[in-house]
Image (tube, rainbow, N blue to C red; front, side):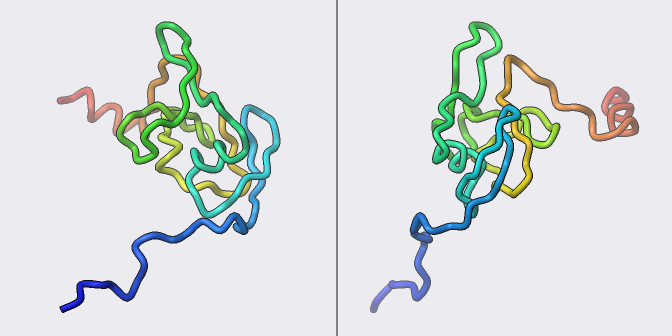
Length: 117
């Protein structure tokens, strides 16, 4: 009995994906769409995504699956986003993350509720 699936497990990257326009550190970039922010930035030649909080050492994606946190960037005003876990979209404004960043509270009620615990 055959265990073969009729659907492929992986979608091959053909290199023919449409380009999308984004901004990285206030510089315009045209990057391949249909992939994560991390993969798109790497394809565009970006090699430094963030700096470590203590020494300022440069960091870039390592695992590409959300386990290592080396690819943290600010996306559309939200810091500490794992760029390997977010799909790239046209118009995104992405900034390298310098040092430690805190996530802003969702809203005042959520922040107040958190302190009540």
